[in-house]
Amino acid sequence: MMKPSIQWMRFLVLLLLLSAINWTCTKIREADNKTVQRPNVLVFLIEELNFETLPVYGNFETRVPKIHQLSQESYVFEKAYVTQPVCTPSRGSILTGKYPHRGPLSFNNSWSQIIGGVSGTYVANPEIVKQVVPFTTYLPREDIATCYIGKWHIGPERTHAVDYFDEYWSILHKFRERKDEPYSGYNYWAQEKGLVPDQPDGTFGYKRMVNMPREFSRLTFMDEKAKDFISNKSDQPWVMFYSPQEVHTPNTGPYNSLFAPSEISLDSAYYAGPNDDAPLRHHIRAQKWSLGLSEKQKKDELVRYYGKLYDVDKSIGDIVNHLKETGQYDNTLIIFTADHGAMTNRKGYQTKMMMFEHSARVPFLVKMPRQKEMHKVESPISLIDLLPTIFDAMQVDIPESFDGKSLLPVMQGEAKPSPVVIQWHPINPGKWEQTFGKKEIRERVSAARFNNAISQKMRCWVDPAGFKLVLTDNYKDKNQLYDINSDPFEFRNLYYQEGYADKVKELEEQLLNWQQQYQDTISLSLYQN
Image 1 (cartoon, rainbow, N blue to C red):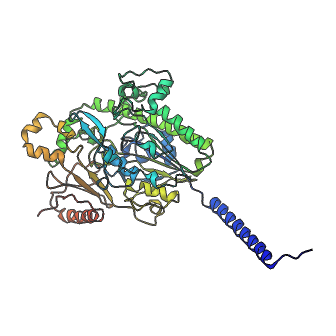
Image 2 (cartoon, rainbow, N blue to C red):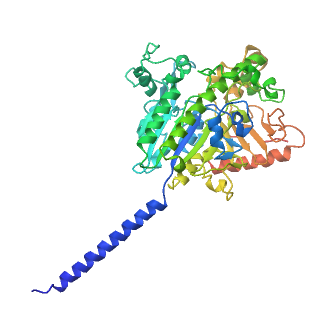
């Protein structure tokens, strides 16, 4: 029998060594996968919901048992603010991680252009749309499944998000530019249910959609798609945004009669309007919206608003129950928030677009996987930190392009959150607001002053101690300072009152430092002795 050669023996030893190394590496990877398991992430992004609509924030008149149950197992952020209190810029920050001034989404519908004047048709601007980079660009898409259901509003509704998510289900027909452009996912689903479109272009009119019976509503469509995604992706980590258009105006829906007006109470802000120390823009907007409505009209609006919120609560309960039924609840990070608030006719303002608390401050609940108790976070935070928090929780590197930082250390009391800065850039810019203001306002001020008021940019600094500073650009209107602790409805503008100069200068300096850090170049109106 021939003896094996020395070369052959060396080859066998090397082969055994390589096999051992490969086996060891495999076991290490398997151990890592078992030890480091990415959670799922479910974000409920509600439309036009202010913070003071939930029991956990002190409102026990609404009926939201499922959201309330979620809050009891969540971190409850007492003071969460959007980056800009209107749809597109706020959603831009939430979905791209950038402040409005640092991207192409600084004002509402800024990714589009208007054809045919102020009331004309919105048409997408391709050069702007391609600059909008959603967060999924930075996720390992081969490892993490992604889904977006509902309102988008940072690009064309039915075509933009398709490239950035594994599944995308749209609900809006607005901004449909071409006859050959696909309808919304809801439009096809409703027709499959036997409903016949009522519009000449083959779509369902907005008034009809919001008044659909529950079984044919957009929420029911969204619920079905959400549960299908959760079931189909149970074998891998996933991220899903559930973004209904509810509770956006008009305030109408299948639960209009759920509440009686006698069940609704109105706080003092419902009986107030802009006073003499308010900026001109406040007077203009109040005249546009709800100044002069009766108490009954305001209660009737709230009855329907709360009915829409009840409708949303049913959907959230349905989806959370499905997580439990599929065994994924304990491994899912759940976030509940809104793209902006709503004044709901306080101080003469119906919806958003104001720096006031009920316009810019939103509910923000973060339920960590396996969390069973509620914890409250009192520090003011900005939704600019939402995406970094998701990436941190999923153990994905936070992109340098994100302007915020993770809230996980804040939740553990180990760090401070990002500064809270709220922005305002006029819509289109200012053209839409040209429709504001009754004749008597236009007649009593100069055209230049009126145009300054509706075209101004603003920056708002929220001080952790409870002060809120609002500065306009280039002295176009009055600046504002409020003490939220003693004046929660922001009735008293302290900016020009004696004794507050030092506080104003202190906060202005902090805001100017933030501007320098984030390359914000607008010229703010600073305090003058």
